[in-house]
Image 1 (cartoon, helix red, strand yellow):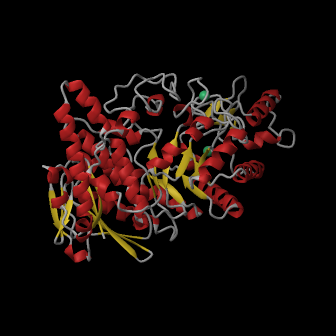
Image 2 (cartoon, rainbow, N blue to C red; image 1 turned 90 degrees about the vertical axis):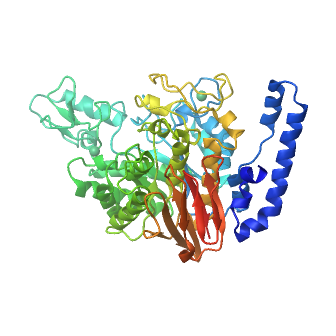
Image 3 (tube, rainbow, N blue to C red; image 1 turned 60 degrees about the horizontal axis):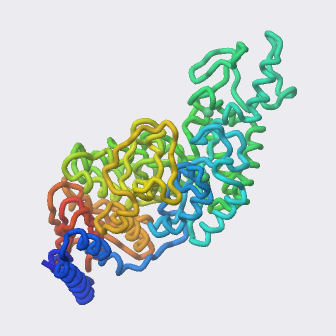
Length: 564
Ligand SMILES: [Ca+2]
Ligand SMILES: [Ca+2]
């Protein structure tokens, strides 16, 4: 019984044998504690309370704890996407803020993440702040520039990099630039053409007398202005030297304050009708930032398939988000939902296809895998019925163990749900079941009530088999073996099949083999041809743990084994 729980006898590799003594000791101690509790329990309730305090590490926690972190301070990180509004509130107004985020850096560090992407923090009339009125300040709801400086200092103390959302495609229609341009156009006599020497801001936007697609009428005039998303977000004219001059000031402003890079919003829309000009705009921006800070990290949002977004690597940008693995119908979701053509192998083939496509345009890039973000229904909602929790966990392993700089959306580490509208995709972080607990946010006003399947964070932290602990273990593996994120990725196609997907990752003389079983069935695979000594790390989504013996990896449904 003890051995089953610990999985010790199933894992007969050399390293495991070395650990066996300690594992058994832990198992015995845990077993003794449980039996003692059972022995003195008169009523169920007391036993339950006492038993909860007895944290009994899972087999994966015990195995993975043997690996020291080996974090390299480069741009291959694990990035935590934060919607500040919904994260942690420091002053009791129910809205998350920079001081609140600073208070939770220990939590983010404890999860293993070493980069933060903050969704827009600049002044804006909206709750989401993707329509900016001042590119060189902090929105009052979130705090002050002093708060920002303190946040950067605290992040860097922990070796956490900070990238901020940079919305360059459009401003708010309340931005002083647009207001000045609109007032000027409104003042023009009938038939007169705007003159940038009279009002330079007319050149900042795209005004037209023709109502083309993506344009909205300027009220009270016969003029239209480009606004691809919504009339409150006028598109900037990024080919304008004056606009580029403004952007140059903005990048300097934030780089001087210590940001480590930028997440670029809506890259595909820079010039909506002309991809060449869009890539030119992007190239200009990348060069602008890199000339000031060579190791700044830049990642672009181009919401399309890899054959399209790969082209934007021509700009020299570090990363474009890898949309093909995200969402319910992406490769990860398809494999786990059983709709992928080649089962587990589909995951491996897809990683190789994306790599090959990107390499057509650049030989130096960092893939940016992510599974969900603030524009997508949350992942826990992708899986219902049998094995829903196992699939929710496994999806994060398939995301966070991809090569590149991997992204995790806040709240996904506890399997939060939320999908109905944009607001519902950005619900308040569920720190506690007590809505009055310190730091709890109210979340966006128009969010829909959402039934949650999984516990709040405080409870999940006490459960070794929670989604939270699974994600934490996954990131610990990423941090222990730098070759997982970097270097050469080989999909071991011949050894992979419908149920099992195997990769070799090599970097700096180190080599790790990753075996994924994203299927509902147990799988055994002979990996002796890959030159393996032993199992070094694993992920289990249930109490059943994977194992390795005499060249054979044995993986229960929805599990991962790392071999070296
Ligand atoms: Ca607040
Ligand atoms: Ca545009």
